[in-house]
Amino acid sequence: MPKFISPKEAAACIPHGATLMIGGFMGCGNPHRIVSELAKSGKGDFTLICNDGAILNGPDGSECYGVAKLIRNHQVKRLIASHVGLNPEVGQQMNAGELQVDLLPQGSFVEMIRAGGSGLGAVVTPTGVDTTVENSPFVYSKVELAGKKYLMMQPLHADFALVSGYYIDRKGNIWYRGTTRNFNHVMALAANTVIAEADYVVDCGQIAPENVVTPGIFVDYVVDGGRAK
Image (cartoon, rainbow, N blue to C red; front, side):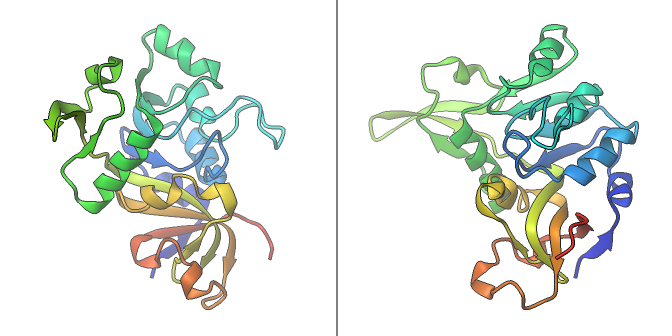
């Protein structure tokens, strides 16, 4: 069973210089309480694997939403993502030489994470052939199979996956609501340590077995997101 910890304890688990996968799409599905504590921690030099750099003005009225806090604080040295256009600070830091940004096609990005979680050696995809994607450090090689060209992409793996679930029970089983699921469920399989933030912590049995997306066996720590059921 996972250990239940506070957001501050979750941030304390993560060392300076760690490689982090953080679920979310423009902040939707980010584990906001964990990220906020990490932003206060003073730690940095992170490699961040996240779909994007989130946005500067969140729907909750925040100036920096989700992982945008980490970008704002210059805590990220490298961002591996598929879309960064809605956070101008990503481009500003990249152009200033303060942040390394590796952009990947979104489908390739998620399959590379899935491969990292499944123990596969590569992802073979036609996406990006004869484009600048071929110059990515994540491309092993270009191959030809059955007369068609493909790129052989590296799997992605992280030290920590920080994910968000709508319901998480006492054994760590996770159900995701709607589009907040996004990349969370694949990232939960592709890291050495998984810290899951619950919108609502529920008793065992309140998530129907067929609705469990991420089994608790993959979850090391759970943070109560603070919502009352």
